[in-house]
Image 1: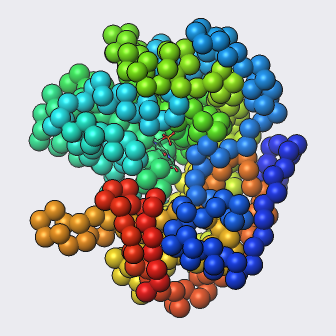
Image 2 (image 1 turned 180 degrees about the horizontal axis):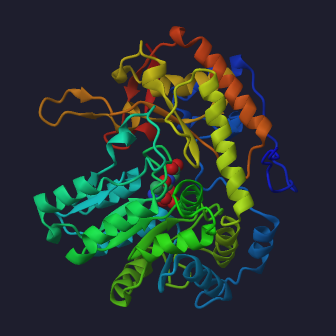
Length: 458
Ligand code: F0G
């Protein structure tokens, strides 16, 4: 019988987490206007708000922090960082940034003109915002299966190649400065993209002179899924699969806060030295000199080590197993989730779970509030609070396409009993789901309203 998959590490440093009573949580939630972004982290027991910047670093990474060379120019840590990125990602030009969105801003500032269209399987919200800030349009082209939460598909993150071809015919190749593929597709449920799909996109756009970029935040998790699911790759190392993914691309943006196993950092890559020069000019304006780009030398060390550690296949087996385990436990309890479980998070389908709450009464946010009240768990709504907007013609509020609650799992942070606790709490909330009521907005900022909104029960 195969042995159970265990955490491939032991714990050297611990950080206490604090239990609260239900009465305390009721007061805390009310004071925070039912917005979990406004709850103090100290008042959260299990924090599944994001997997970004929340990883536990290894002993080796902490040792690397001490070895960080803080020289302004051409530090030893920079060369280690650059050489590690080159060896894994295969790109010649490496531009360090303080996090992923800084890489996005620089890339789109150089490549996009007003009126351009940038396709992606699904843009992450900062990616979309940076494209729109340039006056260009961000167009999501997921495969149809991606929009049906219960539907199984091994590569539900794939980009719809037929729709991409139709878009190119519609707007013309000259208005498409690049195509992006997000691996794994975060906004679409943490779902992987196949090598066959990346190859098909490349074959379509390369003859037209359109470059392909990967949004590489969770590249190792994506490569792991390819090894498990794509015919012909079972015996290929994750490192070699990653190399094959990036060899098909002309560049990438990366947030090292995810598969860099670091608490801060990012980078932008290309093989084009002229493009890199323009990007470095912008980098100097806001991020820093090209050999540190908004990061301390110690951060560059921690990322270089994290990028090697994330390719460890025992780690990736544990990572995928722990996310899948939470998904399976929720499914056994009846909780509807996006199937199959993705790499970094489980997405509860709040629309299916709470049909009595109309989308404009924010079922996802209501579920987030219940999970916090029940057990001190913090998830994030990805639904009408985050993506709802007013109809530009009638001014009527419009709901989002899906009402999801993301439970993102920080890397190497929580143990199996923490995950069991989360599964039990979700099952308890599910058992009394019919009594859950919606929320109404009492304050909303004009954009990115989910961060600061205040709400009250209906
Ligand atoms: N691209 C993807 C797919 C992301 O998930 C994120 C961040 C970014 C880009 C931006 O990177 O935060 O370093 O600037 N996602 C986090 C999340 C915030 O919670 O999913 P960043």
